[in-house]
Image (cartoon, rainbow, N blue to C red; front, side, top):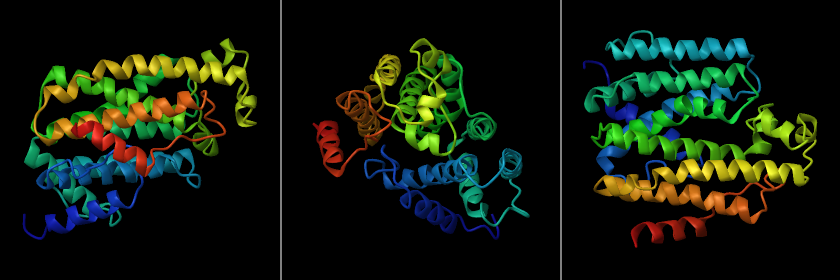
Length: 288
């Protein structure tokens, strides 16, 4: 397409991706080089939208305005229109256009991600665990679908297994990041569990890590593991390097779960992270 530099756009997305730390593999060396640029494009889009939703400066109205603008630009590039794109997102959308076109990816997957980010902009508490599962349908599951599309898979069974893993990873991230989420006044621990264990939002904001808190996180980890492990057969149903990338991702999630359990579920005072040593162990387990 005349005047559009796809290589420059993908390079921009690669820089964005590599500038951010993630516990779980993002476009690691296990993914073939020719596929990585598409992962970079998707990540760059999601990172930009996530930064809007998590902003401590913007109001809810401003966040929605910016996310609606992203959705409008997504609709534009889906139709092959590149005029008047926002300078801050132009390269990302150029790379996304190429990604959607090359891989025949439905734009609904990206639209669903935006739906989750919009929800984050206006909703800061959840009543039930089922509400979190519904949220994960939009915040996490599309990411797994996009990875499968990038590798040429479009199979309902694989998507279902991927949903278990991605929902599990989303939940793991919640229980890992309780303190971080509090910093932006967001609570993903369901209120029904808070009440059930005679805990309170006030205790949470005061970072009271008593037995009630431990019981809450323990129950949430058990629920999360039950979901997460339902997807453990996914890596063996795909071929090539994707098999190893998915194995590494799955083991990464289990590593965080194990760390939370070893902390006796006290994630208010300690944030479990995957260290360089952990990554090496995950790599060995993945390969052998």
